[in-house]
Length: 73
Image (cartoon, rainbow, N blue to C red; front, side):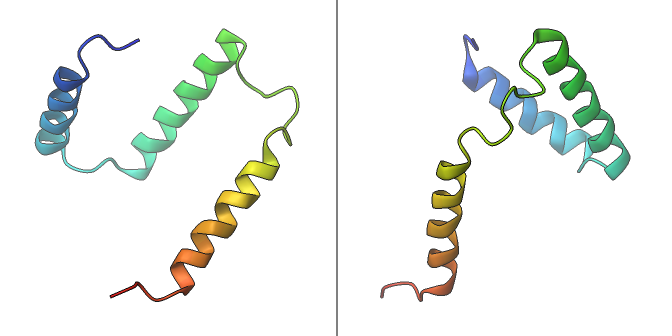
């Protein structure tokens, strides 16, 4: 658990400002490392890949509806 999220947020902002946006290769390596960490912790891969799919479908439907309807004025 993060004890001081404001300090972490400032660190992330400073890091992005100094390094600029992440390249595709950096993002791919980061994802691969995070996936390995999840596997080592036993959280990945999911035991049932379709678990919670109904919620994902419902959220996707809501988001798609928001994108197609004009904003109220």
